[in-house]
Length: 313
Image (cartoon, rainbow, N blue to C red; front, side, top):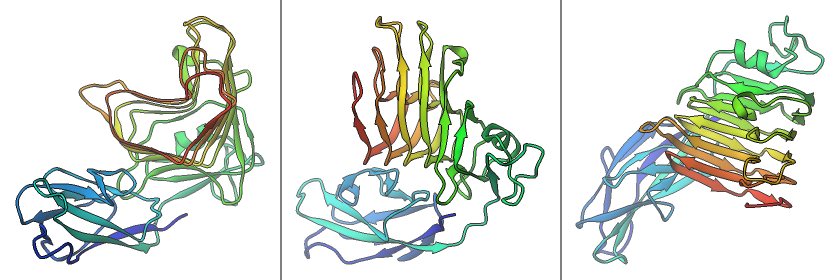
């Protein structure tokens, strides 16, 4: 498991003598992932940014118009981010603060899935389960499920939320190359993902090959990874999604590589990170390779490769 970072906010001097200065009260603060810190600026009205991005991003942390910064949840690749207050009257006048992180070892329950396992086992690394869905049904929210190399021909649904103290994590085991293969599988409710996250928060899917989900029927939409309903802090990282296809050529035929649908308005899907994925050789009919639709806010789509698909990226 990767270490959970603890974030330390440290005030720094920034800008010129006329710049809007940023002060932190208290001046030094240790933040656990997901915790918040109020920053204050002098010098009039300011725009708050994280690493130069107004409002920040899910992976860097978000900051409100009033200067309240919320630390991101791991995984984090940075050692420090810059909080910046830029004068709305004179943008060259600005002040800064730094948020630094410190790693600690997480204490998350971890379970194993392997093709050599049995669902009658206890899910330990020595006695792994055999199916991913059994692991997700059995483990509580806030657990890590590590999946070994092999082809898993099953629909996978995540229904248990984690928390800021511990995500529900579905991930490839270290060095493993698990494949979720949809060959021959049906599409429940007319639209479903090989991996579906429905009304959950604090959940991560990482490191899977997801393939071969095909529909030859109208209004039966296959999706590689689908997120729907409402929730927050969902991360789709480093997955390879390919050969999700529909065979028809009318508007009733749709497929997607990744779909994020906020369907519980006024509740939203919030703080979504889609990073490092590859989506290719999709036949999406009249739909897209990657889509976010409905009530979705504070999302980040970065470092993804989308190529060799027949329709909209």
